[in-house]
Length: 87
View (cartoon, rainbow, N blue to C red):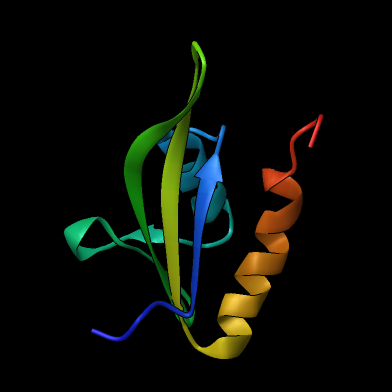
């Protein structure tokens, strides 16, 4: 399998919420836990928490693949949803 068109580790957004964001953008549950939209597909994987001192924050790997235009649309639409106050 080729590398995904776009890969990002998202910190501070739970997997269930990231999945909901992708569903709002047209993603439908598919085989093997994939979300499939028009011209794109996404795989979400819970990864090890980010730790600094006693602080632990959850992380999710987003792998987004598909037609370049479709991937670009999804990335652009996700950006404001993934912005968090404070950085």
